[in-house]
Amino acid sequence: MFPWFWLWAPQLRLPFSGDVAQDIEPRLDWFFNGIKPEAGNARIEAGAFDVASYGDQLGVISKLLIEMAERLPADVTAGSRPLGELRAIHDRIEAIKAAERDRELVDLQARIRRVQIRGGPRAAELAATLAVEPVAAPRTRVTSPRRR
Image 1: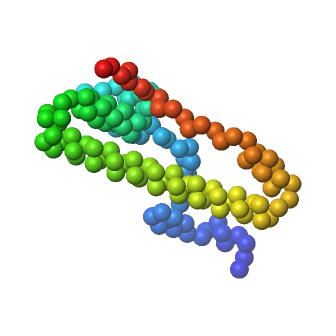
Image 2: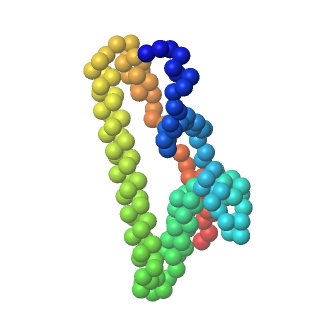
Image 3: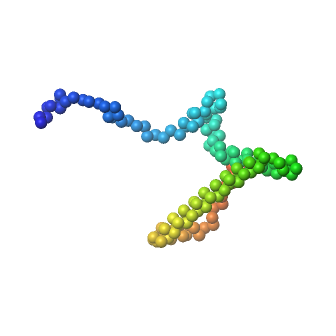
């Protein structure tokens, strides 16, 4: 084949056969941009979400409602079906959290064992680091004052 024939070669472009340009920058504001203008301000929602996630907010509200209900006389709360449902939901969520923490702990222990088995100077550093007292769990961001 002669090299100058490329000048007369036909150019056939099928769909999805051209150049590809892709923006790799992640956009994480799609959730808050989906808030309708009449429903609220997306920037305020994003700021509030940075302070406490929706799950954190709901957890605090649930705990507050349960605590307030426990302060009421027993005859008032005895037949409260919504309170029972709220307690059941709260207990199930706490069980999920506990199971996830247990799973993380088991995974962490397995990883530590693997490092100890391999040995070396990093294993000695790890042993020295783990000999320090454990870090206390972070406190809840939002607290409610208790009134009696």
